[in-house]
Each structure stands twice: as structure tokens, then as C-alpha cells.
Length: 268
Length: 116
Image (cartoon, rainbow over all chains, first blue to last red; front, side):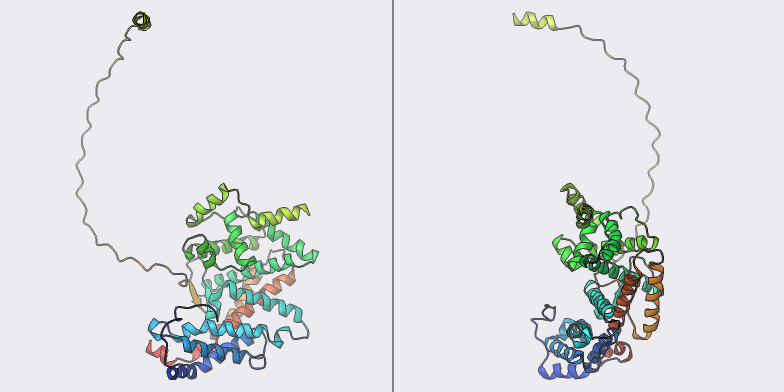
């Protein structure tokens, strides 16, 4: 709830109007909490998701400014979802003992990272792939993007684990990543290993966020083809918008993070 | 002294190279008429970061979760990733999608939506 928004620091509604908004959207906010609970097999009330959602709803109602032209639900949805997932994460149900819990907990952890990587999910949307497809085809392409995202997250988790088996399994993926262009390695490393947003990367590189979004989508498509065929291709070509930066990196002889990781693995 | 020395260094003027005649100018083609100009089209909307999104609908829940299974099967068909990891990836994506599907988004229209 700390994130500054366009709604902040503006003259908002009167307390009566804000309360009316809470009243009107209460059921909807609870519905978001129930969705989070359903997805993670939790109890939306016993695990405290209802309270977190209400708190976020009240917070948003106090900050909402209709003059900004953004509908209330569009403004509040992401924050209510975020508050519900945060409450879920610290709930007793998150680490509930029982059968299959270790697997379930790991899956929950990966899915929470997907919300960070694809924040549009919190707003009830899914990122589209680069292909100009529509309907089911487009939806399937988006789902593949999520699957690739989750594959990278589990690869990182596998590397972090002490299990030799896991390391051997994930080594193939690291080998593939190590052969990508340096700039592509950096995008994956920063997003999936460090949790940086595409906006943060674009801002550091002093360019439009869309350039990084498009490069990432092309990269995900490339990884998808490599996983499907179980073979490494020629490294993906850098798109024109990022090419000057990529050339600069090469001229500086900057090593890719996965190339370094791969080299370390070869030494040990 | 120096003039004499310079003179000694002067060699005869070499013959001029044979000149070739200037070729005739080719026929000048007629200048084409300027075509009719067309109005400049309105510039399209600049794409924004949030433009490439698809809405998830609760009523498609079963279909979407089924799609995850099918796409995971296709994606990992030839992959050597361990089965446990594949299952983990599939379940995590299903959880994320399921948590993003809000029942009331589709079923109830608010006063605000009606106004908009």
C-alpha cells in the first residue's frame, strides 16, 4: 500500500462519499479475497483475507479522486488483490501441515512470483504475446508466457537448492541462457533472479518501458520454442530499439550473468 | 647555384593524354505530371504499456485451467525437465490464474460502470 499513485496527493471525496464507495464495492472486494483464497486453497475468512481486502478497500476509498477519470474498480482492484495475497502469505493456511504440503507450498511461492512478474494478473488481465492473434489462440499464447515465466522461476529455485539432482536438471537451462545475447541475459537475470520490474530496467537504460516489454516477449517466445524442441537455437537477435545498448555492452566486453554462472559451474 | 641545380631537375614536359570526344546527351525524358496528393491520415494512438492485455473472465475458469494443462503438455512434450518440476510449473500457473479470476467482476455492474 506504500506505492504512490496518480490518485495520491489529490483532493479526494468527502468522508460520506468515500463510505458510500466502500458500501457499494464491499461485495466485490470480498469476491477478490475469495478468489485469492480459492486459488491457494485457503479459507478467505479464517485466514484473514477478508479483513485485508476490506482494509485495502477503505484505504482506496479515502484516496480515490474521481476527477482523475479512472473508475474506482480500476484504481482499487490491484491494491485489494495485493493486500489479500499479502494476508494469505502470512496466514496459518499458507504453511498448513498435511499431505502434499511441501509441493503445494512451492507452487504457491512460484505463483506469487508470477504476480510480481506479470502484475496485470492482479487486475484480472493476462499479458498478450507478440503475435497478433485473437480469441483462444491469443489466450493460449499468453498462458505459454506464464508457463515460461514459471519455468525460469523454478530454474532459479533449483539452482538455489542444495540438491545435486536439481542442479544437474537446471544446468541444461542455464547452459541455454548462457548462450543468449548479453542484453537478453541481463533482462532475464534482473527480472527473474532479482525481481526488478521492466519499468525499472527501462528507466535505468533511459528508454521507453515498451521497448523492454517487447524484448521480453520476444525472448519468452524464443525460450518457449527452445523448450518445445528441447534444443538450443541460434541466439535471438536483439530488436532495433535495444541494439545500440547491446552493441555498447559488447564493446565493453560485458559478460552475461548466465555466462558467468555457467563458467563457475564448469570450474567446480 | 641553386637555380642551376633546379634546372637540372626539370625534365621535359610529358605529352598530353589523348582526349576523348564528349558523348552526346541522351534524350531527356518527359517530366511526369505530379500525381494527385492525398490528405495526411490521422496518426494512430501511441501504444501504451497496458494496451496488450486480455481480460480474464470467471465464467471461462474451467476452460482456462484446461488450457493450462494442454499448453503445459505441448510445451514440455520433448523437454527433459523433471516431471516434478513440470507439475510444479503447471500448478503454479493454475493457482495464479485462479487467484486472478474474480466472480463479481462479471456478474455485477456498479452504478459507476453504468455511468461510464
